[in-house]
Image 1 (cartoon, rainbow, N blue to C red):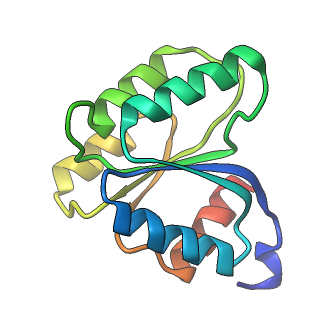
Image 2 (spheres, rainbow, N blue to C red):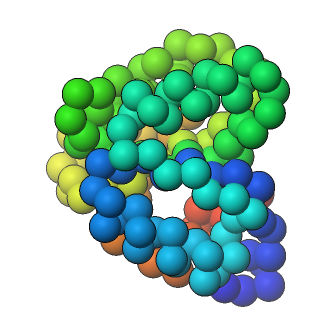
Length: 136
């Protein structure tokens, strides 16, 4: 990480049904000092419940969300639709974090105002640096 990347996120959400991806992401963000706290969720339902509670109480609202698109039951698209419909005051940048290289998925994801970028797995130091530049 460069000197320009010294900004640190308070709370980040990672939403992915693959626990190995979550574990590897946790290791990387810890090593590069990306955030103070990281909350991980293996389902979009859990993440949305936590987010709604945080918004209601005004405590522990994430500074950034990384979400996979392809998950069982409630996928990343449904989460994006629900988050977009909330009309919340806080600006919570969302980064799509997926293995999909489908240009249709990329175009659709970037059509959401809340989505800042489309990141293809795995997460790397360079990709974390890009996230930091986009949210500063």
